[in-house]
Image 1 (cartoon, helix red, strand yellow):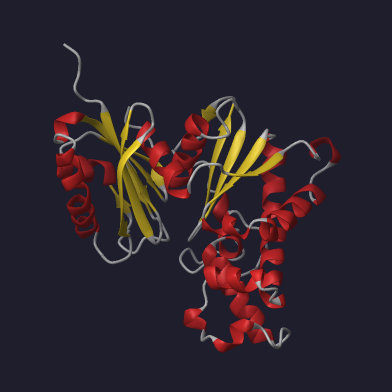
Image 2 (cartoon, rainbow, N blue to C red; image 1 turned 135 degrees about the horizontal axis):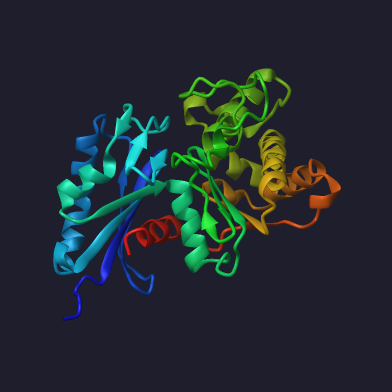
Length: 320
């Protein structure tokens, strides 16, 4: 008898928002939604919030018996154990949380978990521009910085499930202190939306950019979206923020190229809206910091998938 389980649920847990989608075998997202990741301070409260948003959509599709699994992309997600471990950008994260197990208990559907950037990489490989690639890197530029590394056609998890944390690689020794880990100078402290905001605030405080449009805003109003809007208007400070951000990110990507020699690097996430303001300095910095044997070989590409789609589809692929 043919199984009725023809659907899966893909969930992407971001530092600010969580997106979910109900997906069929063709990779079509039939229903989707969003909840805030930050409104609860305890994991079971967060799962209750997620359940209340997803369960009505499950019932519309015929109930839990129609679903063969839930796939979850999460910061510091351990594919081997189904746990979220010491994720610095999740308010309700405390130590090691058996998240997949808790989800399975709540929803009554088998649940599987991986790092959120790994999920985005899987989505790009199955449904995006990396379909025919065996070696590529996905960089997610959101509240934090994540990475998924594919080599010889397989996602690299490492011996403990945590390979690919490029956001926490040191790019400026003794540099900016990370707001959660306490590390000094990691990539995430500069190349994330949070990092872009901090760079802009530092530039304002330096007094070197008189007349910036940001001067009329208190620090708490400044965010990456506002910086992007003013950069588009030619604001010198905001343009410099993206140039410096791109320079630092390009250095990190050069190091990544020299250890894994990917065919392409995909940039994915909200900061990609900056387009060439970000891409040009990233590309220039990456090539400048590569030794000749690696130069002009790696395609640097903005992901073709919608921001929400790639993570949802990648996470959902875990459940098939």
